[in-house]
Length: 114
Image (tube, rainbow, N blue to C red):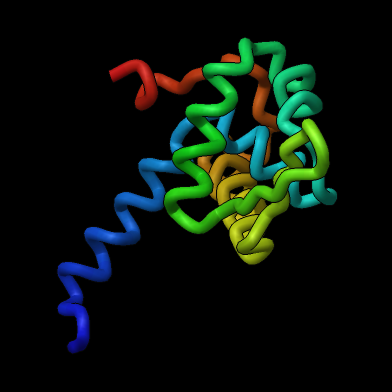
């Protein structure tokens, strides 16, 4: 069975929605540099364990990360390193959109405010 073009785009849209959260992007970015424990992610993100666990569960359910137990720790790793090309692409889009200006934290354009 082959997927129709519409189904493929629907799946792509779901993946982009999954990534459309800064906490999940932070997790993916951190895991692109190697495995780490859930505790390290909690500390890095400065959020409670429950919040981080929910984000990790979503990433795991979509095949982005996987986990393994090591004693009392749960260690996560990025399953799909190719997803990091998305970060480069997003940076290029933002750079072009801002006319080459560096993106400032929290900066929004008039288009964003609409």
